[in-house]
Length: 284
Image 1 (cartoon, helix red, strand yellow):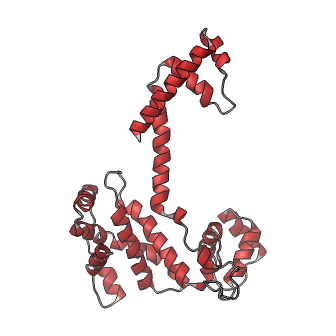
Image 2 (image 1 turned 135 degrees about the vertical axis):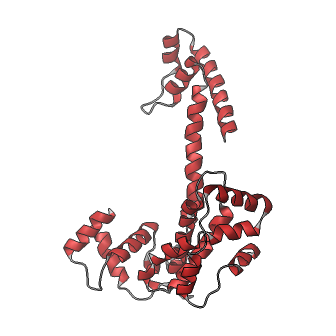
Image 3 (image 1 turned 45 degrees about the horizontal axis):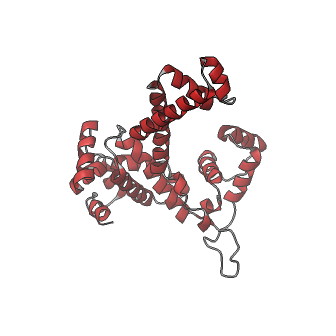
C-alpha cells in the first residue's frame, strides 16, 4: 500500500480532466529494452522510480481504455482513476523475463479494475449474477442504442452476434430496465441471494489466467521434449499405453509386438515413466 501511495502521489496533478489527458500523452513511450531494465530494477531492488516510469509511460493506455466505458453514465475521471489502480497492480506483478510487453499484460488489469468499479457503483450491473450474464450485460449495453425495447429481429441479431440464446438477450434487457437491487440481504431475509455473493471472482484475475495458460503450455511442451529424449522402444510403449485417446494397449499386446515377455514390457514402462517425471520436474 505504501508503494502504491508513493506512485499515486507522483501522478500528474492538474486542474481539469482535459489538462490531465494532455499531460499523460506527453510522457514518452518505453522501448521493450527499457521496460525489461526497469522491470528488473523494480523486481530486484524495489526501485520506486522504476515503477513510476513504468506507470507514467502507460497512463495514456488507461485513458484510452476508460473512454470505452463512458456509456455507463459514470464520470470519466473516476474510470481513469480506477484504471490507474489496475495499471499499478499490473506493474507490481510485471515479470520482465516472460517476454511479454507490459501493455499486453496491463490492459487486462486495467479493464478488470474498471469493471469492478462499475459493479460497485452502477446499480444495473449488480443484477448480472453469473460470469456469463456479466459478459452479456457489457456486450448488450454497448450494442443497444436508445431506450426503446428491442424488436424480435434485433433480439435475434444480437443473440447471433453474441452467441447466446434469444431468450437470454430478452431476459438481460428486462433486467436492464429493472429497479435497484440491494447489495446485501436484509437481516430479515438471510437466505436471499444478493449481488455481494458474486461480485468477486478470483478465477477472472488476469494474472491467474495467464499463469494457468503458461503452466499448461509448459506441461505440454515439457512432455513432448521428455518423450523425444526416450529411446524408440520406450517412447512407443508409453505412447501406446498412455497417450491413445481410444484406450491404451495391454502389456501382452506390446510383448507380442517386441517379442519379449509382458514383465519385460512392464519394467521398460516403469523406467520410462520415471525418466519422464524427472525430465518434466526439471522443466518446471
